[in-house]
Figure 1 (cartoon, helix red, strand yellow):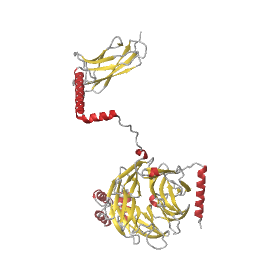
Figure 2 (tube, helix red, strand yellow):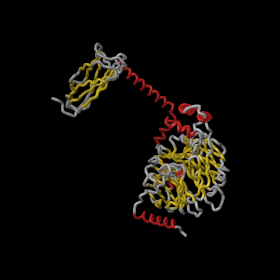
Figure 3 (tube, one colour):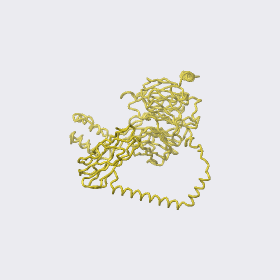
Figure 4 (cartoon, one colour):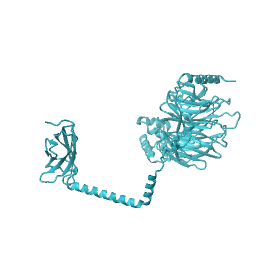
Length: 603
């Protein structure tokens, strides 16, 4: 017999299937998804690490379990949704950093427990009731810090001396300070005495917190097999916990704080733990070692980590999606149109289909298989968490929460197919199309044989011609320097540079000469400018110009007007000489190619 939720869900699916024929698809997903439910005011604020799907009652219907961060410091709750309604909620003592559903024993009926990581503790719920609390072991306390607080307890030092000593310990000690000392250093002077009187009699403890949590199968890979809890901490450690006694089975160390984690394998056989850390690197831990086996260095920090088959897909802050092997070899990289907000895996065992769901800041959710985009879903608001799996009695349910606290449920159509051409790995199909290369002609074959037989002689001839060209260019350059035919002076006494600008359409042109002294600190004076031109074609209004004292580094413009006196539509070159009084040879020369006059000559 169908439950009320099943009838509601079937009705929504029926409406969605028929509404797609009458109205255009607003989600832009190509008709592959059905809109089952959307509640914009659900008040559910969470991330993908705090969302899971599990059959908590043993009746075959999966529920949505979410750790709600709330809007304030006291609104954290553990919420359970059944269908479209909130089934139950329990208050949490601290902000949840992760949530997983796992089987902790072999008892019948097979009902999973829920583990919520919050602060330094893991709260285990069974049958939606508190069952067990696990607290991380304390860390080593700095011996110098203990001695300082002991002196405070005995009244040997005052509050200012305590502050100075703690600051010195924080700068030099290898073991970090406790939370109490760090809190004391952040207080104002008038608040220190009250803080000391309140805490000086209490022992010092240094406690870490949980940053990420996952599950690892104990001995079998069955779907309902017993699983161990895997947790990453702020102290750069990874712990594997026994599912029944909650003792530490294994401890591994990382170079940085873990932020994202993916676990595969069995603890008693072989396992791999892929961890993305706060330093921007990805480390891979294996069973036989307590240190990372492989390291993947990224160009930007990771924001999402998903395992697809034997590969790892990483989303980065530079708006890119990258694929790596288990040993860290980079396979591919593709860009996304907006910053990545969340990622999750999409696994359909009945179809043998695996892909990656990527939530973007531009209110879209993209579905990728390798580097190929298979589907795109538009959402009313930016998505903060994505979860795909069995919800209710539907195997292909996509559950999303939005930045505004909304809850959205979509169902993959049973007839939905994805383009196999795009999903196939490797080069694009256009790369396999053969080019229409023409056949080799007899002339091409003869030329190839000639080059093969006379290759040495042809190379020598080419080198000889190249050397002759270089020699001719060098001779021309030396001649231009010796005869001052270049626009740059070669004299160390008068290092000058000149360029000319011609303005106008004709027959009257404006000629501007820009002269610059390129010396470091020596001015140049007693210079003049003269023009050489064809008097039948041009008339220069001021053919001789006096140049003022040239200060190093400044550009001095000299202007005159040139009039074209010919109506034949021809042009010529005007030579500009920069002269020095008392010398017959010019310091430098510039050739100006005059444009053709487009106007009538002046009478």
